[in-house]
Amino acid sequence: MSDTVRTGRCLCGAVTVELKGKPLAVSLCHCVNCQKTSGSAFSVIALVPIGNVRFNGPVSIFNDVADSGIGFERCFCPGCGSPVESRSPQLAARGITIVKASLFDDTTWLQPHEQIYCQSSQRWLNGGIAGIRQWPAMAVRNI
Figure 1 (tube, one colour):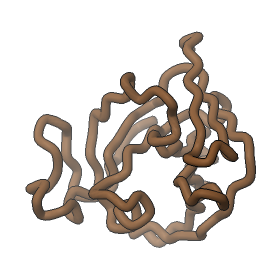
Figure 2 (spheres, one colour):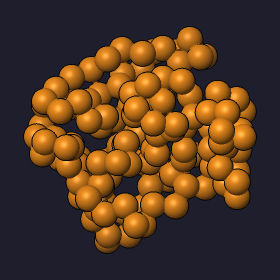
Figure 3 (cartoon, helix red, strand yellow):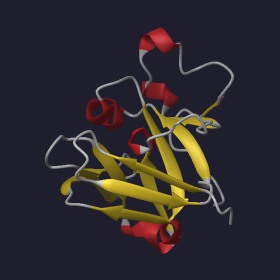
C-alpha cells in the first residue's frame, strides 16, 4: 500500500473522507440513478478497500436497487446533499466500498480507466467518453 493519504469533504464540510493508498479502480458510471444523484451525465467513482477509507460526519441513506436486483445504500450529506459513498453487503463481503470521487479536495490524480452503464449514457456522449474502456452495463472485474 502507498503512503499517500488523500482527503476531502462534502460541500458544507460536515462529512470528511480520508483514503490511504490508491483506489482499486476509478470508473465513470453512466447509470440513470448515478446521473440523477450527481446531477450530471455520470458519476466518478473510486472503488477502494474498506480498510483504507475513513468517513467522519453524519450521512443520510437512500436505499437503492441495482439492475441486478441487489440492494445497496447511497450515502449522502444530510446538510448539503453531496453524494458520499455507495455500499452494499456484497461489496463489503469483498472488502470494497465505493467513494464518490467528487469528495476529494484534490482530484488531479483521478484517472478513470473504465466506464460502466454506457448503454444509458447521455446521447450526446455517443455511448461514453472516447479513449476510456466502455462497458454497456456493470463491468465484471476480479477485484
